[in-house]
Length: 115
Image (cartoon, rainbow, N blue to C red):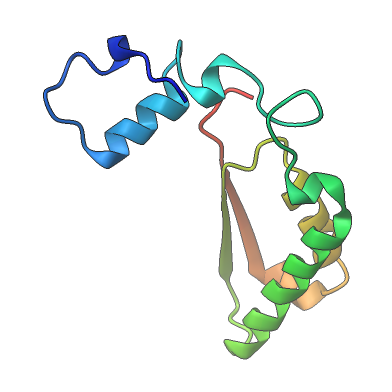
């Protein structure tokens, strides 16, 4: 990746989190802000888009881990960067097969990019 010096010229030192925030989300030059990187026309395709099986396995793992934790009444599932929501759509559908877990889980999504 070629970095544009304009987005880095304001600081003598740059923290790692600032660096990644700029190269990924800068409105003009950021990877996720300047083009749509997903799918057949993008740079990559994520596993949930290729097959539901990946997401279903993750869902079963969540339920299994919740059971190992003693089936807490409330558990949070947080997905950072859900993109088009491919993973969470299948997770939610799979959770319907486990009604006790489905009642316990609260889902939070955080997508920083504009896609």
